[in-house]
Image 1 (cartoon, rainbow, N blue to C red):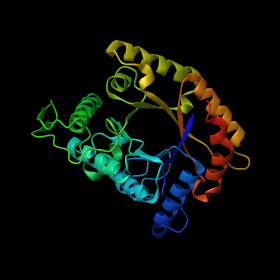
Image 2 (cartoon, one colour; image 1 turned 180 degrees about the vertical axis):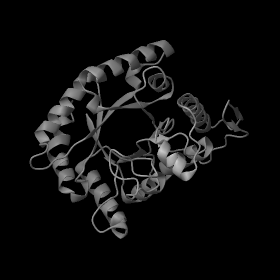
Image 3 (tube, rainbow, N blue to C red; image 1 turned 60 degrees about the horizontal axis):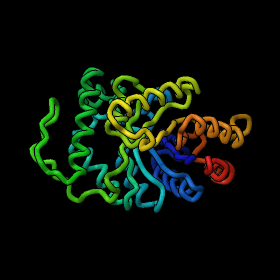
Image 4 (cartoon, helix red, strand yellow; image 1 turned 120 degrees about the vertical axis):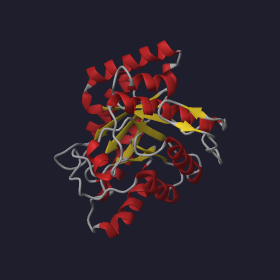
Length: 293
């Protein structure tokens, strides 16, 4: 099992002027510790489960390109991009640029979006759930067409592109892995089976629910003729490696339980991530212990 790190908050000591230094320190420490991936949320206002809307929130692809320049090996992605935030053609260009500038280390994390508050605040159209899901599928089709080198037209219900030219092409082959976020059983997991290279589920759902979700994904794969084992199964969780909170041994146990279900990567966010020492401890005490799971 691999361990990834998500950074959901930029509220750190020193204020705005110190954000870039904290980010650099976190990214370099995570890479040295052996983390497999580094993620940021694609939001414009802070989300309720993390903090107040007024707290600092940076644009995700700007952050990832900054982190790409500071690192050499760790993979980079959004957890996950809301499909309504950018036109598909521009989104694919952004992910391609990240992949090229990082030397082939980009993930394409994408989902149907959910935060109506920030969309309304910034004037971003926020259609119904059904329409957002349809736009997500069209975006996935456009991405695959652009990454195939086929510069033909794309004519969907919601998106119409005259020429899907994408030059340069990404370094990742055949393209940056597509991670589709979400747990919806009828639509989201079917999109994973049809288009995705990875899924992301919430570890907090518990063993029984997670097993059920994976079983449903496996059934969708059978329906569409997809090899289930081609899809990377990732889980997202919060860990707090600190006195009186969680121990590294408990984190290893959590990884062991997830691996038994078939998960291959645990992506964690950490309330005390800017202290750096918890990252180092995971690198020393967790990553080697779970590498063989």
